[in-house]
Length: 506
Image (tube, rainbow, N blue to C red; front, side):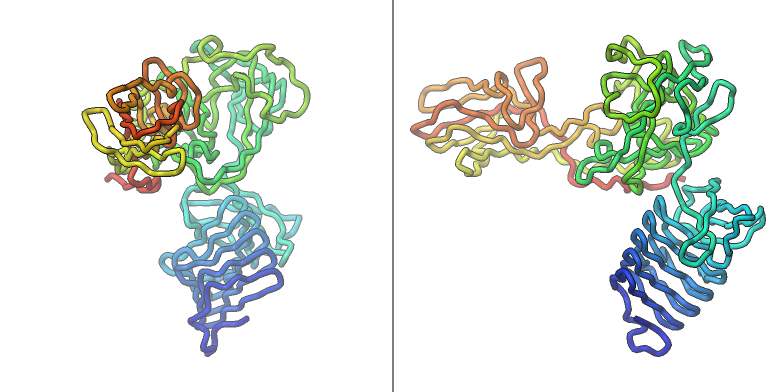
């Protein structure tokens, strides 16, 4: 397939799917965009061809080629893991041409023919990735992000054309400070190695007694903190030079700040500390020392592994030197207190957000829970009226149970991540009373049973729903009845959530 050089379709090409063995060549004067390049497919832009703002999507095994004189505008391509963008010297990036390369994406510098006798590297400065041969600059490409600034990637031979491949990966391993003051990537640490730790305020060397690895595949359709996305702590996010490069940790991993361990998810601010949603499949590591301790990870103070009962979820090489016969406890065995109290974390969150120069947009919320009932036979019942905290519903004869349905929200979303309450809550139900004729009786099945849609029990004569809570009424009513539901609390509820809605503060 060919577009350009007078072809009537020259400016109409786009939105194509290029499968294995297929090739789309875009010639001088032609343009295309929004093509999907599957494994074995190729799209080639020759001299004078245009790649417009829609951009190409390069899947695993696919290849997009930007030849000499090709014109790039905006994000010319998004290259997924295993996909390749081939760059020929002389590409015209204009004023805004960039390529979005995701974790595992490859840049093939075609003009540089790989030879085993040379040394190759890719060095990122700002958003420019430059290829070096034996220390000398040879070619470059502009990336869509400066997140890789300061990183150096190794080179390899491209199997397609023999050129130089630079594979973009997120920060190499997290670097752990060792007892001899050197740094070692966490994935290279072995049982018996000695690491620098801090226990009770004192610096001391401890032997590694266990190392574990676990693969994480992000789950779709759940909040970021539960989906499994790693949290990226930007270089300098905590203080000047701390961490000394971007630090990637899981959402519940703790950093040591202001004398306590704090889960990093509670510090997410949408700027210097945020979920990295481009990483959807990765392996993370944990290191255990003789005693739970504070260690230096990329220059930031963090925790070693504390076995609270989840060791079985990790794989580990070699033999375990020390294996606790009991599960450990944060209150009794931790090197520092674990603090998730809002009064402690919120000022810390505010300080780090202010330091980053960004503030997250306040969530848009609403107070109305939109509480209604659905009967056992599927009928929807709206509130008859409300008297203070009591919402009244007219029930039809024969009703043996109802579902209390409402909006739901997580306090950590509506108030802020510094609130350690990730439950998805509907309304807090107190007293429930059923009126039939002149008689009334209390209904307490939500307090005494464990029926679907109710959150865990807590002190007091009340219980939260989770948006669709079943309330059995125990016996069928011959006549209609009035059900009174006391709503003690609820909301606010999100109207919409846009986690990327962040503005810079001058």
